[in-house]
Length: 306
Image 1 (tube, helix red, strand yellow):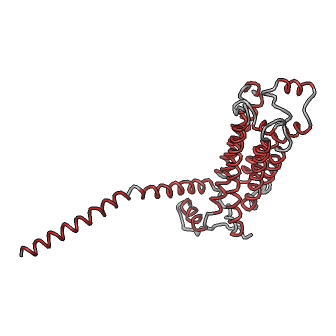
Image 2 (tube, rainbow, N blue to C red):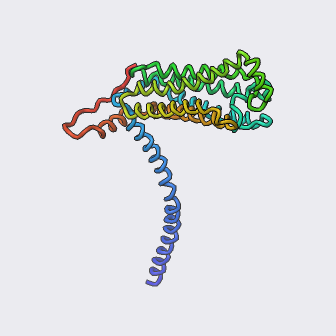
C-alpha cells in the first residue's frame, strides 16, 4: 500500500513537472498570435477600404493581366525608392550641397561632381511612371476616357527620362555670376528644355488625377481623387504666385512636391496590387454585404473577358 502511494505521488509530481513547462511555453507564445492576427487585420482593413472606395460594376482584372499588373506595380514602388535614395545619395556626395536651398536638378548641373547619379535616378523614376502607364491600361479599358490617365503617366515618364541629360547650366541659387549671366545672356537651349520638361512632369501628374476622377465617376473614389486634385491645383497656383517668398527654401519646396508625386505613385501602385490579388469570391461577398435589404438577388461580378 505504501509502495503504491509512493508511485502515485511520483506520478503526480512527474505530471506537474511536465505540465508546468508546457503551460509556460504556451503562455510565452500567446503574445505572438495577436501579432500575426494584427497583420492580417491590417491587411483586411486596407482591403475593405479599397472595396468601399471601388466603383460599383468595375470589372475584375482579366486573369492574363493579373501577374503583369502585379509586377509592374512593384516596379513602380521600386522606382520611388530609387528616386528618393538617389537624391539623398547625390546630395550627400556633392560638396556644399543643401537640400533645403537647392533644387534636385542641381545635382546634375554643369560642373556637378556626380551628374550621373542624377541622370540615373531620374531615368529610373521616368521608367517607373512608364510602368504605371502600362499597368493601369487593363483596369481602365471599360471606363470613360480609358487612355487619358495612361497618356498622362506616359508623358510624365518621358519628361522625367529626358530631364536627366538636358542639364542646368549652373546653380542660380549659389552662384551670383550664374544668376547675372542668366539675366543678361540667357539660358542655353538644354537648360530651357530642362525647365519646360520639369513643368511637364508636374502638369502631367496633376492632369492624371483629373483623368482618373473622370474614369471612376461617379464613385467615392472618383470624388476623393477629384477633391485631392483640386486641392493640389490650388496649392500649385498659390506656390507659383508666392514663389518669391520661398527664397532660401527652394529645395524644400521642390522636395515637398516630389513627395506628393511619390505618394500618388504609391497610392496607384497599392490599388493595382489590391486589384491584381482580388478574387471574384471576395468581391462577390462584398457586393452582397452592401446590397440594400430586400428580395434576395444573385450578385453579379463583372469580369473583363479580355
